[in-house]
Image (cartoon, rainbow, N blue to C red):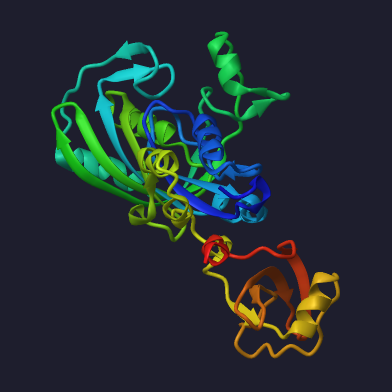
Amino acid sequence: MKTKNDINGLLLLDKPIGLSSNAALQKSKRIFNAKKAGHTGSLDPLATGMLPICFGEATKFTQFLLDADKTYETTAKLGAITDTGDAEGQVIERREINDISLEKIKAVLEKFRGEQSQIPPMYSALKQQGKPLYELARAGISVPREPRKIIIHQLDLVSFSGDELSLVVRCSKGTYIRSLVEDIGFALGCGAHVVVLRRTAVAGFDAGKMVTMENLLAFSEAKQEKELLDALLPVDSLVSYLPSIQLNLENVVSLKKGQCIKNVDTKNYGSELTLVRVYDSESQFIGLAELSLEGFLKPKRLLRDGVRSQIDDLE
């Protein structure tokens, strides 16, 4: 396996149930023998699915996934309210499930589409005076939380049977599916909590690119380095939706020195200040730069020298 500082890339881990996001991160770091790594958006231990983990230089671009839309599949249990909003908590109230028709469900869901104001749950990692809210909640303390603006881009009913409701949700950053399910339950008049939660997409990445922990462990135990490193997506995949520009060696050197490149052709880059992916003459990703309307290219976030794809290094 490569030295710790040489692991650079993005892992789309299919997080298993029962594992915290931090535990999944630490386990992945050990498998890859990586010194530096971070995940981009926590999943509850109850939740499964896409947990993007950035290694090495990819950590410079984590904010682009933290800010991205996310898609979930969730199942809600109607008629029971828990202290955590999901099946890991204690039931604190039970209500009768009366007059819950398909038409009523569709009417309620319609109210939750679009821009919403959502109050974060007490059982969350948000901090109050430096202390995570979940620590206060476990101590029986509840504090006021400021509502936050979120956007529910998609809220589709998959199935409704008995006391269970299955949904697909595509939402903006900062959305708590537990809170959304609770609010839907209250709007239906019976209460609800999450019993199944799976994240299927983050930004432009879909479920087909995920890798299971079992597969990673198998590659590691069999010392299959190429198969293990093949699980990593390149660093620039985190910002693949941004426009790109290719520079000659002289301009690459100048950019890496922190200098601004002048007289860059802007005709293909829109009418506003644009963030662009920068590549050298060999199509190696250099990092991100800002391109102004006047044709000035200013370094924004660059990779350290010598960073190439993991597969190139193996060949």
